[in-house]
Structure formats: structure tokens, C-alpha cells
Length: 200
Length: 217
Image: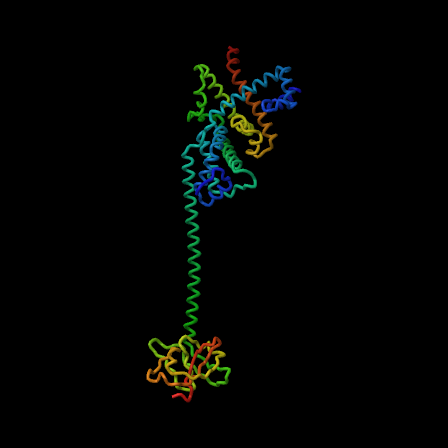
């Protein structure tokens, strides 16, 4: 059956529920990437992100009626499931093992190859980004969500509020607090070598 | 603007329209407060760092194996559902067929029981007092012959004794050969003879039984 490029999500979901595989595949391809990025940036783990996204879409296959178009967009619904799975994963995972695997697929190296840097500069930039990534993964979950959506995914406050189903003011205050915590953490990390040198 | 107000408003400094008063006040405060100027610079650096970290994964997608697994699950699930629906449908169809078969069997059984009983006397509206009828339908291989006994009606093929309630006796004159149209066997040599026949006519106007009238040869 032909899929129109702009066919609505709820229409595709109804067709998928009746056994139209093409409709389900279209839904998956439309929404999987942002969900995967969110899961990856929140968990710092490619395997966990893969499993979380798979779980979210399994829910669509097994319980399509759980989605109510009156209550919001399908993407928000999928984000809700993804969030819950991420939270469960984080509860099970020791904090020390976070951000261990995000570079397994060389994802962390992307975006650096094209910059014309000396090896020393490259190393410094790499270290800095690693520090930022680690600091984000150490934020409390509610602040981390705001930073991931508005700082990394660069969504607007309104878009992030819709996805997390909370007021815009809540997003602003969480982002503000998250950035403050990040700055404090990064300041500590950057000052640590200076303090170590001063104490000798 | 105070430092506290700047901390709240300065978060959105880049996205504020230049004409908005809050933007102007924030810019003014930046020029006059070194602490907030340093904070703003840190924010800018952090924003750039977050943008760079975000760019590292901006094209990240779930691996193709996830799509394969999901599609496999989709097919299995819908095949199972189809099979379940087919099984339920088959079950109901079988049940309905069983009910129909039972009903037909019951009707046939009633019909067979009705054939085996002796027909009761029938009183016509025209005052015929005693009308006896022979059992409906011939046995296999038997020929129905119109009885010459004035007191006895012969049921025509396809008639049942029950149909003779409220039947009317009609005397008609007809050629003997016409009796074959009623399912009776007739002597061909005498087919042209005119005879008088008493017909028992049912509510539907169809003859159900007959006898030859007394003065017929």
C-alpha cells in the first residue's frame, strides 16, 4: 500500500495496527533517530540506547491502542516511553559505568575530523568535549533531560516542554539549574590540574 | 538590573530581540558587572561546547538490526493474530453448521414420524360424513390407483393427512387419462372415458386426495 510522504502518524498507526507492515516501517523511520539520540545522550551507552528504542517501538506493535491522538502527538508518546525506559536503565546502572561506551562506534570523533587543528589542539578539544559529555551524564536526571533536549538537540523551550509534557517555565528553570551545575562541574575539572600543581 | 535578574534573563540573551527592554537592560548590566560578564562568557563557552558535543551525535540513528527485529516481531504478531482470528471464525462456522444439521435432522425425523402414522378421518365443509384416506404416497415401486371404493379417498403424491383438515370435496367430471397428471396410473385403453371424481381440495386450492364417484365404471 502506498504511503504518502505527509501521511499523519495516527493514520499510519491505525493501518499498522491492522497489519500494514509498510505503515509501521514508515512510522519507525520517521521517529527512531531523535529517540535514539535522546536515549544515547541520556544513557551514554549505545547498547542501552538501541534496546530502549526497540522497546519503545515494540509497545507500538503490541499495544497500539495505548496511544491516544487526543492527548498529544505520537512523538511525545514515544518520547514518554523512551524516557521511562531510560530512567529504568539509569536506576539499574552504576554511575561509574556511565559514558563508557558512547565512543565505541567512533561517534565521539565525528565533527572533529574536518576541523583544521594541530594534534595538541585536537587533543585539548577532545578532552574538553569528553569533560562536557561526562559532566552532562553526571547531572541529575531532570536537569540532564533539559540540557540534552535544549542544549544538545537544540530544541526550543516549547518543543522540549511538549515532549516532556511539562510547562515551559519548568524547562527554563531546569535548564538554568542544569547549566549552573555543568559550569560548576567543568570549573572543578579545569581547576583540578592547577590545584594539583599548587599543592606540590 | 540586578545580578540575580541577569542570571534569569541572561540565559536567553542571544534569543531576545534587541528592541526588547530586558535585552537592553541585560546588555547594560554586562558592561557594568565584571562577575556577570564572566558568567555570560562561561555560558557562551558552555553553549558552544554543548553544541559541539551535540554535533557529534546529531546524525546518530538506531542500527538497521533494530528495524529488522521490529519488522520480524510485527510479522510474527500479525500472523499469529490472523491465525487466531481464522481459528475463531472456523469454530463459529462449525458450530453454526452443527446447529443447522441438527435442525434439519430434527425436521426430517418429525417428517418420518408423520409419514408412519394412520391418517385420521377428515370432515369437509360440504357435509361428507365419513371420509377415509389411504396413507400418503406410495411405497417404493408401488403404483397408486384411484380406488373404486366410494368411501375411500386416496391421498395424492406429496400430500399429507394433516393437509386434509378443512378440505373441501369437489365433484368434477374429467377424462380418466387426466388422472395421470395427478400422479395416478391409468389404463391407457380407457383413458378417454369420462369419469366423475370427488376431489378433496385443501386450503391452497390444490387437490390433496380423490375418489372415484359411486356411479363411475
